[in-house]
Amino acid sequence: MICINSLWKETADVFVNKWNDIGRLLLEHMYLSLVAIALAIIIAVPLGIYLTRHKKLADPIMGIASAIQTIPSLALLVFLVPFIGTGKPPAIVALTIYGLLPILRNTYLGILGVNRSIVEAGIGMGMTSRQVLWIVQLPLALSVIMGGIRTAAVLVIGVATMAGLIGAGGLGDFIFRGLQTYNSALILAGAIPSAIIAIVFDQILKRVENRAKPGIKRKKWSKGAKISLVSILVLVIAAVSGFGIYQSKQKENTMASCIIKCNKHKK
Image (tube, rainbow, N blue to C red):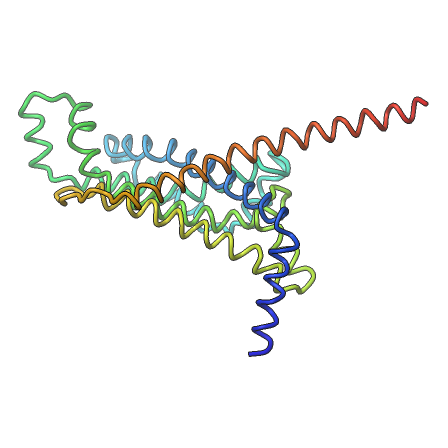
C-alpha cells in the first residue's frame, strides 16, 4: 500500500513539474491520432462501398488488410523508416494503416446488411444505383460504419504511443523514457492522458453511433450534453491548431538561433 501511495505521489509530482511537456506531447498525440483517423475514413469508406459493387475483390482486399493488422505496430513503424524517414510522416502512415480494417469491414458489411427488399423498393421507385446508395443504403448502414470508426479511433490512439520510438512525439515519449529509466511515474504520466483521450473519443463516437441507429426514437439532447459536446469539439480543434502554432514557433526559434550563431561566427 505504501508503494502504491508513493507511486501516485511521484506521478502527481510529474504532472505538476512537467505539465508543459505533458501538454505539448498531448497536442502531438491528438494531432497524430486525428490525422490518421481522418485519412483512414477517407480511404476505407469509399473502398468499402466499392467492394460492395465488386464482391470478387472483397475477399483478397479484406485478407490483405487483415494480414497487415497482424503486423506488430513497432515492426511496421521500423519498416517504414527506411522509406519515409523518421518523425511524423511514417507514424501517420502506420496509424492510418491500423485504422483501415475496422472501418473497411464495417462499411462493407453494413451496406451488404441492408435489407434487400428495401433496396429493391428504392429501385422500383425509379432510383438510380447512386441514389439508392446515398438515400437508402448509407443511412441504414451508418450506425454499423460508426461502430467501425469508433473501434478504429480507440485502436489508433492506443497505437500512437509507439510513435515516440521514431521521433514522432506524442505521449509515448514519456512511456519509453520511463521504461528506460525504470520510472513508473513517467510511464503513468504518458499512459493516463492517452487512456483519457481514448475514453473521450469513444464516448463521443458512441453518442453519434447511437443516434445513427435506424428505427430508434431519438431523444433531444439536453442543454448540458450539448455544451459538453461543443466543449470537447472546441478542445479538439484547439489541440490541433495549438500544435500547428507550436510547431511554427519552434521553427522560428530554431531559425533565429541559427541566425544568431552565424552572426557570432562572422564576428
